Length: 206
Image 1: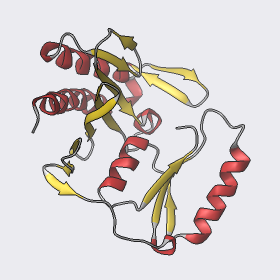
Image 2: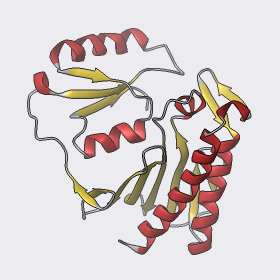
Image 3: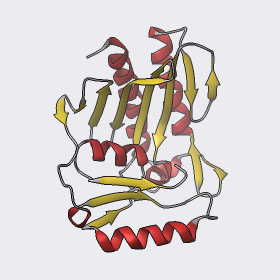
Image 4: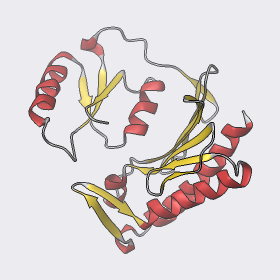
């Protein structure tokens, strides 16, 4: 595993430990509404800070682009962080959420980690070297017909101006596939496509 990916994995697992501890008593958390149907908890902030600390320890000159704290520094290397994708799931005790960390080098994504702390599933990828789930190589589905496909989606949850257009898409896809699933954590949905668990995924305005 590449040193930078190894560091990202360490950071994701550190964040996952914070999330798992907090998941034992979700009702005790402080929750803030950023905007309609968009929440942030103290866990998001603590997990993000833990990720940044791990990354900074190894790469103090790298830039950071994080969900809660925004942009920090300038560099040809930028770490892109979502400490808890699926916060709404998390605060309801629905175990479908993940830590998402990527590294961009000169505008090209080179390393990525999506970690599901509830299931202890670690998805990793290095550009040009494939993707893995807990060190096992993964591949996309071989299904080629929509009628056989299980497709993931994300519902509009902040901006409802395109809801009618989305519902038309949903109707069309539902009628022509084996099924549609909406689990609520896009990073995991995309990782599931990479692992062949879903045959495709779509969401508007993601």
